[in-house]
Length: 137
Image (cartoon, rainbow, N blue to C red; front, side, top):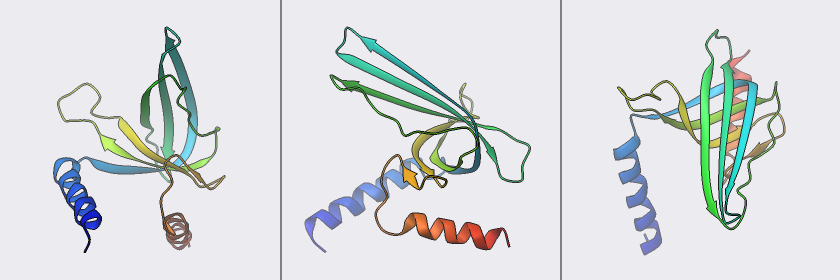
């Protein structure tokens, strides 16, 4: 193993050690998407996206929030519409805090348009779609 592989493996292990119990995903249909953009002095841009997802075969609704701050350039978010089938990967809120029932978004995979917020290498999307087809048979 080279230096880069060891370093990335170390980062992965430490991330799972810190956030492993909070990692979660929600798969279902998009109920609504709310995008809020705010610019402070035309230099600092804030993007807040709130997504409501109704998981498959469930009556619950999951609230997912994505926050991005960027200097000089406007942060971008993928195009999501009501009714799109998505997989939202993220972190659950800490227990005892105010946002414990919402998910802080790390990645969004849109299965309808086959696009991703953060590109995942390999055939991860194809594997997920194949598993989803088997699940519904």
